[in-house]
Amino acid sequence: MKPLTVIDFHSHILPALDHGCEKIEECREQLKLMKDSGTDIAVATSHFYPHMHDIDVFADKVDRAIEKMQASGLVDAPELRVGAEVLLCKGMDGMENLNRLCIRGTNLLLIELPTSSISHKHVDTVENLMLKGYRVLLAHIDRYLDAYPDEIESLLSAGAVAQINAYSLASRSMRKQILHYLETTDKICAIGSDLHGADSSNYKKFVKAQKILDDYYPEIMQRASALLEGSQVFSVTE
Image 1 (cartoon, helix red, strand yellow):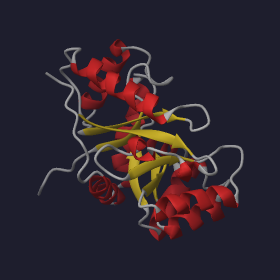
Image 2 (cartoon, rainbow, N blue to C red):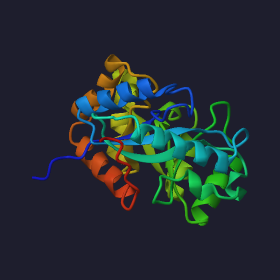
Image 3 (cartoon, one colour):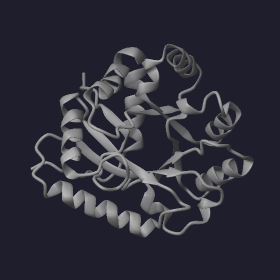
Image 4 (cartoon, rainbow, N blue to C red):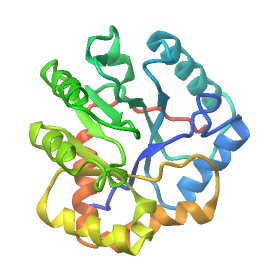
C-alpha cells in the first residue's frame, strides 16, 4: 500500500510576511518541527487582506521570502506549496491579478470568512469567484459552523470545499461536531495546523488529528492531494 502523504494545508511559515513568522530562524524551527512530526507537504498561506494589501507587492514579498528560505541552508523541511489566506471582502472578485494569490500552479484560493458578520454579498462574491473559474477552499470552517451554518451550507452547495484546523479537535464538543459533519459531507478536503509559531506542543494537535479522525483522515489527505494536483513544488532544503 502506498504510504499516506501528510499535508498541512494551512500554515504561516514564510518569514516576514505576517505575524506567523518574524525571522528565518523561526521559519527554520517551524519547518524542522513539521518534518520531524511526519508532515510531507506544507502549504504556506500568509494572511492577505484585500482592503489593506496590494496583490503584486504581496506576491513579490512571497518570492523574496522563498528565496531567503532557499538561501538559508535549511536541512529539515517538508516540500512547500505557496498561496495565501485571503480575507473575504465584498466585491473582491473584481480585483485584478487575483490569480497571484492562488496556490501556485493551481486556481485554488484559500478564503477566510470575516469574523464579524457575513452577508449575502459575501456569498455572492464567493459564487462569482467560482463562476470566474476559481476553486474556493474555505479556511478553518470549524470556526464558523455555529455562527454561519446556513451560509457555510450555501457555499459548499455552490461548489466550495472546506479546510479544518486540527486544534479544534482538541475540544470534545467541537470534535463531536466535526465528526458528525464528516458523516454527512465529503466537502472537508484539507486539514491545517494554522501554525504561527514553533511550539511543538501545539503542533502535536495536528499530529493527533490522524488518530482522532480515524478512517476520515486518509480520505481527507487524498482529497488534499487532489487539490494540489499541478501545484508548483518549492524545495527549500539543500
